[in-house]
Length: 174
Image 1 (cartoon, helix red, strand yellow):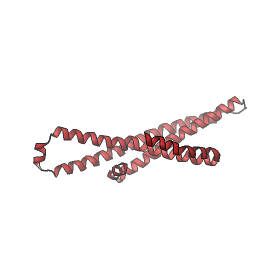
Image 2 (cartoon, helix red, strand yellow; image 1 turned 180 degrees about the horizontal axis):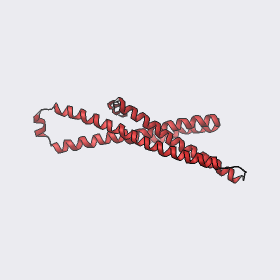
Image 3 (cartoon, one colour; image 1 turned 90 degrees about the vertical axis):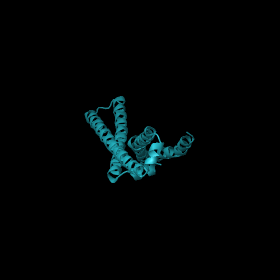
């Protein structure tokens, strides 16, 4: 279903969707780095080491700015992709409706046809404009986290990978 929807996007819409996924991946990764930085700062405070935290605070502020910017650009790009799909779908539907005979329109309730068209197009736009970018960026962030865990500590990476089949089984049964 998603593949069929994505084929309706123009090249600009696909680029907008891809850049939205990239921005949301940056958003999520910057949040992870912020958490790690706060944990590092807490560790330094708890061990009472004589070290300046100004650089860490500056890094937190910059990461917060990056997080805000990436969220904004991700939202803009995902809505552009959604609008692109909305335009393409409505244009295809209008061309298809023009091919029907006038007898079809006298026998059918036009308000009902219009309602069905608007509802279906809005549902498809919701998938592309809201669900798809976040879902794909979550997959990218998971892949980055698995790779980082495998590099830092192989046991932690293998533990994360070993939990994936259980998660897939749970998702499949929902």
